[in-house]
Length: 221
Image (cartoon, rainbow, N blue to C red):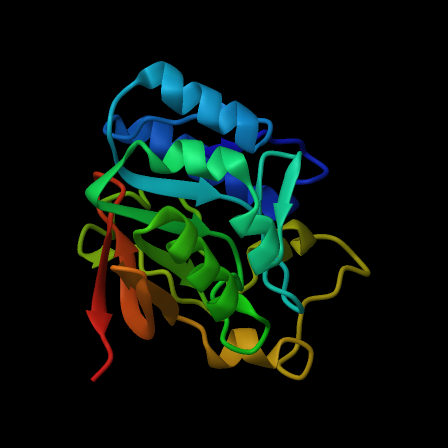
């Protein structure tokens, strides 16, 4: 499930690359939605259980957030808890379904990200994942291998938006002092599990997508 795209809004083309990768994969159903109501309508029209739900969005460094389409910005627990369309989507999640919020900084422990993902896990009654740093979008990211041997790990010190700076004068990239949390947490994701109304947040590493749209990762000791 991915936002409607525009060149202005899609900094660095990250969402467009993710969309292309998902379409080329052939195993993932892609929904381009305008808001949460549109997303719920399309999921209801499909009428089948969702395995893994990936929300493709941009995020924010200073305050964790994600969007569903251009119409719905989720940047607080209240907005998640009070959204009726998320409740409609939840009805199509199975016992083993998981939600992956593919948005930069959405799971960072120092910008409200853990609390935001916890609210989503409580609302959807399932496990939720989100990156603590920048998220990678690239051809072959779903089950592919770089040079045929290395998975497309979601870990990098590079901002996807900075690709738009290549070859442009006066276009600044981020320094460690400007985005310290992103540099320090590169490669780390937050995982929030849900069971009988109880949530638990942990940090995971070595994260990469499977061909079916799930995640492989290593649990921290």
